[in-house]
Image (cartoon, rainbow, N blue to C red; front, side, top):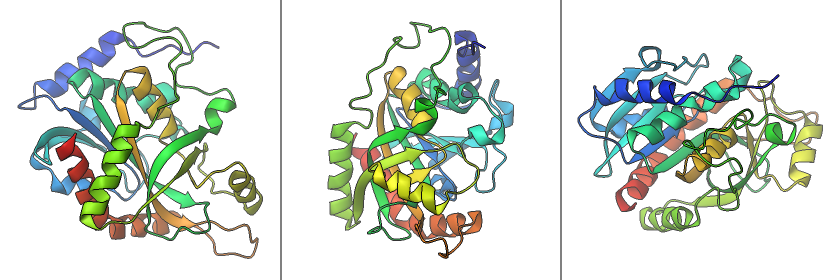
Length: 280
């Protein structure tokens, strides 16, 4: 079955709806992961628009994802912040999950900052660590589920986008500089995307470690593919919400733990993002 790509008129309709409600176009877009929505509290002169009001947007169903597009100033720049993201395990298609990225581009964004809560695969990581994503392994895509499946509209992007510099080198260097100035420890690693919603078994953790994964989650990579297809520069940051183990008798993981870790990390993540946006 061929999956239809998002129609340009749907993207433009959603963008027009948002444009009528904001004073000026954003230059950067942010996607906030589980428990990280409070970063939006740093936005000045904020205009909040519920996803349910934006044409072709669908609401998130997961706790910790508010479902609002917040537009305002951060780091002296106009930004559009997705407070809550969508996931394929909620029953949405990859095209629905990544549709907001298309709209951010249509609104005028040239940069996308994606954040997520991720399980730590690297045994040196600790809960609350911030990891700069240097690259990703998208197991959904490798298994035949890519958000670019279906007819390609060349007005939205080229048929075969290159992913060598998916997480922009210059933006990563900038994030390292900002983190150093703020005294924030910033890890570096490879993010692995799975489908979820079940957490990983010990055997799966061992497998993901063996394939060089440093953190694992259920989002982000598909959004980054569409962002690169759209010509957006991307910066990715994972908040390590729990450290995974290969021990079958090890501690269990639950979503409440993820949300608690997010609350603790906000005090470092928010100024880091603001500093990057200010210097972009």
